[in-house]
Length: 150
Image (tube, rainbow, N blue to C red; front, side):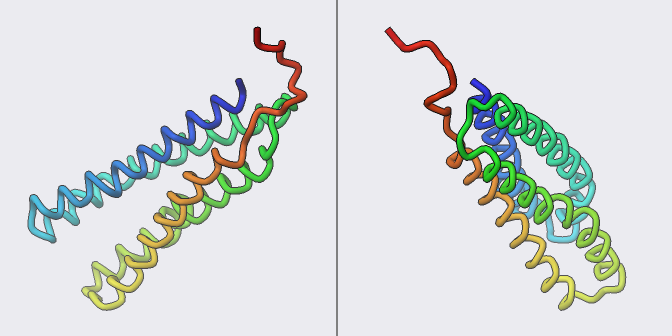
């Protein structure tokens, strides 16, 4: 059961990241001019990061619970991927890249902004991949003490 919670929470986190990255942001940029869409996305980013931080904590806690219950194989590797996903994606983007990108945009440095924005998108994509991979590493242990199925 602990791995089910971990996998379910990973799926929820993954779905939220994919929805924002693959649906909300593209819809804004096709519905509004580039400048207005950028303003709207900038307003949404704090909530996106907050949702990522909350999801990370829930996934991390469920992963730790699964490992401590000794009913899981591959839990430590999955937890490592989750921590890396959070560090590479939301944490690094919010704490370092987002403020730097705002400075570049304010200064009107479009070339540097495009380059660093590309890095931000790459890091977000890597985080999405890591969150998608983590549930595949976790399995219920055969020696978990569950009663045999009838």
